[in-house]
Image (cartoon, rainbow, N blue to C red):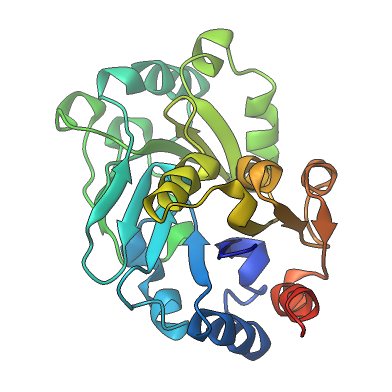
Length: 267
């Protein structure tokens, strides 16, 4: 029985205007009112998606969000951390050296803010994120000695395509690397993905992946789509994601989430 619905945001729940359509809002609010857990799953911090949480009314006791692509599970109303997995500043050293060698900017995120690494130049990440999160520029040497959620290389899609072909094995072995958007490349702690955060949240309620429906379109959705009982790929999903999912729906600009859940849960 499906008790939880996990939703990627960009190009899945959100349309091309970065909005939750009225049809998707209505369908999800009805399911939430009936007791189904609606969980937004994103690489962004919770402050950057607060407007979507409030639009869907996901502010009741027990409502939670998967952030940092599975690295942090947090209750929406209390901000209580249910699960967290990060990495140290030393763990980021291979990524910094790679970015330095390739002469590309780097942003590093802890679980509350972003540190643009100033000695590598200015990135486009702040403009791409367009969310309510604090940016604190620092040189890599002066990053605080704390736990970090991920590193980000944000650049033109063609540039990232080229960089993906030259990643040294020493970097591949240090991180779970995903392309969450054409212009955003994420370097997460090893083994962290959205399915890890969802596993922790499902266990919190005494459930497992047999109780999960998940929607996604991109590489960083692969883990949750593979493990969910019902894994739904958007029509605009990458070919690899369509092969992983066991269900399909219309595109993010065609109310794909509403289209599927209305058919699936119809009496």
